[in-house]
Image 1 (cartoon, rainbow, N blue to C red):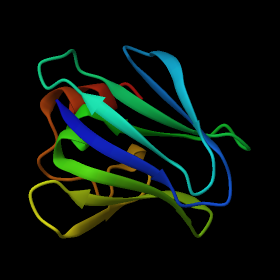
Image 2 (cartoon, rainbow, N blue to C red):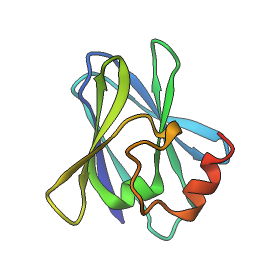
Image 3 (cartoon, rainbow, N blue to C red):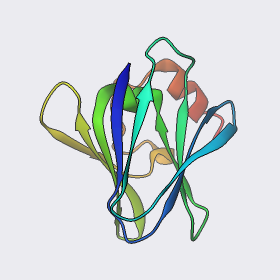
Image 4 (tube, rainbow, N blue to C red):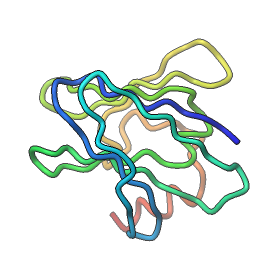
Length: 121
């Protein structure tokens, strides 16, 4: 079992959803300055976690791969864009990535399934 903390470091609430194949269920409304711990079974089916910006409906995705690689993911807003600050699990260094749709800042070691799913978004 792997645990990843998702923290909301913004002034607005987000809905955190869990699922795969486009079917998601609400797991938590993440109020400002609150956090939620995702517990991921490393042998379980691939999952995605959707962070939905409640005001605009904008969505960003946290994948199972992100949870495996990072011990903490902090949601921030920089220049009016959703931004994830990630703390790698195996080191104390921090990496950052913006919107995952365009692939900018995405780790080079993304899983093949994650890349395949991105082709259809």
